[in-house]
Amino acid sequence: AQTVTQSQPEMSVQEAETVTLSCTYDTSESDYYLFWYKQPPSRQMILVIRQEAYKQQNATENRFSVNFQKAAKSFSLKISDSQLGDAAMYFCAWVHNAGNMLTFGGGTRLMVKP
Amino acid sequence: ETGVTQSPTHLIKTRGQQVTLRCSSQSGHNTVSWYQQALGQGPQFIFQYYREEENGRGNFPPRFSGLQFPNYSSELNVNALELDDSALYLCASSLRPNYEQYFGPGTRLTVT
Image (cartoon, rainbow over all chains, first blue to last red; front, side):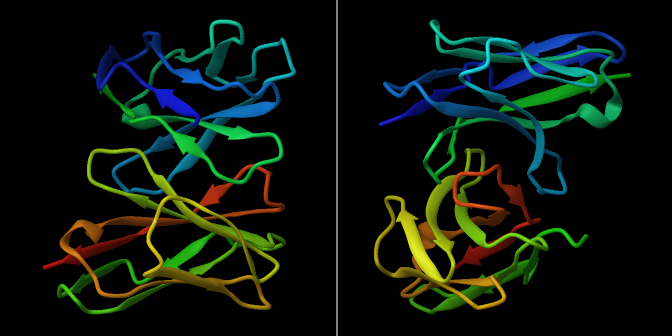
């Protein structure tokens, strides 16, 4: 069974600074997708960024970028120029290329200090 | 383009009762997945519906059942509610079963 682990229950960052959230996963599959979702207090899960496992290039979406290390099964999220609105729970998730079930990590609560 | 919507927003039920939660998928999406998110945890996959058929199920008992309608909206039914069923129930829609999923705002179910 696939597992996704987020080892940082909470992280804190100063506004305008950079923070990195960690995620590791365990799978024997070679074709899969990885995602970072943001869940603010409003509860709605918002897709932040996705990475295809077959792509070596790290995905980037504005201030959000990932560091994807396939051999190490690591998928960290870097948030640059942190803003107050970035404060939320962040979840890392995995899905097989031909699958349907997202497997989520336990989440990291990000606090942004003004 | 309308996003994923869910109803109701909150619900309080008594142990042993039955509940129905509803989800409208995003325009153009034919696949709906349901997740249970207990407090302080990541979401857990319940099941997925694709073209009105169940297309995969997580580790949930049969008292969790679902339905998808021709317009691709979906229902989640839970029978014989237990206290541990208290959670946020999230619905997500996608263009196809293995495409990226877009989530609704969730229904908070409290079982007393």
